[in-house]
Image 1 (cartoon, rainbow, N blue to C red):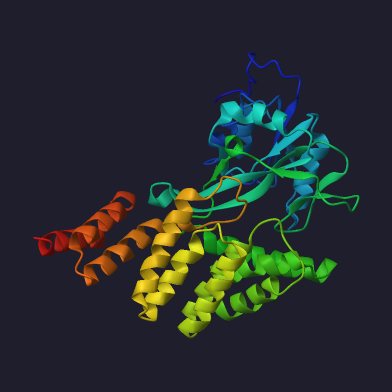
Image 2: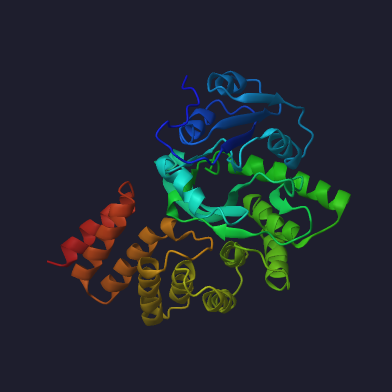
Amino acid sequence: MRKLKPSKKLKSTLKLTACYMVKNEEENLPRSIDSLKNVVDELIVVDTGSSDRTIEIANSYGAKMIETKWQDDFSTPRNIAIDNATGDWIIFLDADEYFITPKKVRSAIEKLSSKDVILNQRINIDESKGNREISRDWNPRIFKNVNYLRYRGLIHENITDIRGKNLNFTFADEDLTIYHTGYGATTIKSKHERNLKLIEKEIKLFGREPKHDIALVDCYVGLEDYEKVIYYAEKVLNSTSRTLTGRGRIYRNLINAMHELKYPDEERLKVADEAIKVLPNIPDFYAIRAIVLCDLNRLSEAYESFHQSLRVWKNSPKNIHEDSYFARMVDVVYAQLAELEALAGNFKAAQKNISEAIKISPQNQNYKNRAIEFQRLSK
């Protein structure tokens, strides 16, 4: 296996420690460590009871191994890793996360070293579908090794200033973007079932906080309990508490749950309009609004809203720090535009749009069939 070996070319005196909390991650861990092994000076792996080759793999990289019993608490093993780190900064990845541009990691951290915590953009991909992007979100994965920064929470744990102060944070640029493979269709349900139990336990032990309602929205989406999705989503959106990111995900889950429970289209449209007002630079809700408008047979408005979603997607500034699922909607937008053009008798425009959809989803047979039909009708 590949040993941890920071690059000798680096002139930086900044010492970096990579930390992991793992259990049975033999499939994922090598790729993750490979993405930072030439960047960091120290590797610490806390194992919570692996029965596969995870410990052997970590040892092959020269990791400092710490084995601890799993106690239904995600923060404790992470804090054990921090307590043993000697670096100036800590990079704490999950085993199913890895950097896209490893060579730029150290210099990117140096540029942001006036802050305590760096939030990384994370691109969630589904390996079962050819690494297709599912969504994007922001998570704190890099932070200073100081005695006042520790993880808190049994589940959905976050790095926290234990002095009670607000985090001195910043958002990373694209050089610190990571890929995340852990939420494909084959793994998501079991994770939500586990998470729900831990959220309920944490509330019982320590009391309810706004973060629990946010986490419960995600859990009930995965468990397809849409009434509870709506209850907790509305609770979050009506709260005076504000999170750093995640409003887009809450709005999207709320609208989807309303659709599943057959709420009137006008009510879904109202929520989509509210989301656009709150998050005007997120393309998702222009597309969702257009889909609802199609259901209402307001096709000219839908046509414009679909195009607006594409304009926002192509022109959004890079410093938008909100979740977005639009990458997995783009083909649908083009396909819907194709159908609207066809309804208007514009078959060449329909062909153009369905071709864009096929570029994004080349295996979609329905798109291919529609392309053939549009070509026939355009003659």
